[in-house]
Amino acid sequence: MKVILNENIETLGHIGDIVKVAPGYARNYLLPKKLAIVATENNAKALEHAKRQMAYKKNKATDAAKGLCAKLEALSIVLTHKAGEEGKLFGAVTNMEIAAFLKANGFDIDRKSIVLADAIKHTGEFTVAVKLHPEVTATLKITVTAA
Image (cartoon, rainbow, N blue to C red):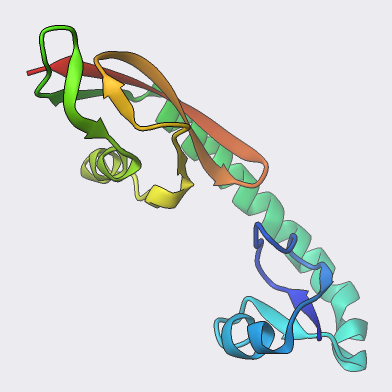
């Protein structure tokens, strides 16, 4: 089934792309959530006008993500955990904890967009990537201290 995307979907494509997906995925997920519309002849004709609107929406989303990226990179994150003598943590710092810290500081970031290669298990300074938009990735500096 061919659909026209109304939103950026990481696994499928960008706004305005015509993609082929499984009928059940389109019928049960994409269409009810208004993430896509069916690619019919009438919708394909309307796509040209919609592409201009979608390009504007895409640019606006990218600009908002860049502004948020600058604010996030200026933020210093200090997390305190119980640790052993050599700086090894009892437990680990996960993306859920980082998302909770960001939410407490006024940033509504989904924990799934925080990319940790491995859980942080030692004290020290670490850098973590946050995917705000397919084209914009922020880098957070996290300092983990012993309690």
